[in-house]
Length: 269
Image (cartoon, rainbow, N blue to C red; front, top):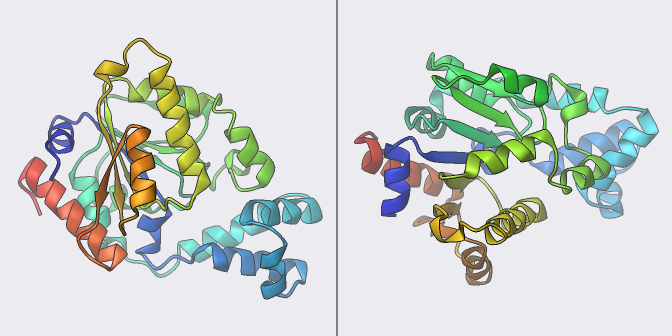
């Protein structure tokens, strides 16, 4: 276990970033299922529709055809929140146990919030600039970085909303830059094939390099479910220390990593 990360978690000085891989361990559908639903609603054959663009452009076409994403968002909400007992997710229990002061998530689902509710731990959800007034020092902040189902306008789901987010100047982006000062960041549940997360690394690294304080930048870390020497080298260049799974199974590898981290930082498993 990496000493700097253990110390940061122990001192409540680490920010957690949670990606889709964490939710997929609950059995949530991948983006393939998302694209199939769009195709069905638009009357396309799913196999043909998925060849017409990536999920961002396909979602934007849906919005153009339907006028809004309300019906699709409702389907996502229903499908992703059915028949799951969050109390059985060891990964979510460990996240709650480690008591990160701030958790950013690019997931649309509410399973992080439901885990905090299940274990009766206080938190505040931040999905837009208005929610920033709710921040309190005695409870975890769960920042919905790509939006929240309760606010369709906040969802980063279409190509246009994604390109707007790449400007990196929204209120949540400004908050992220402030939160990073003096803190380590741990990324879990992300794939290096996701250009969104790679772009975020690039921008954050650029922010540090353009400041006068790069020499005191805390280390940040990313858990990888599989080794990838090319991407690992690029991560290091951008200030992210890769932590590669010891197991072939992505879900079990993440679980074992979080168990080791919790044990090393807090004496818990």
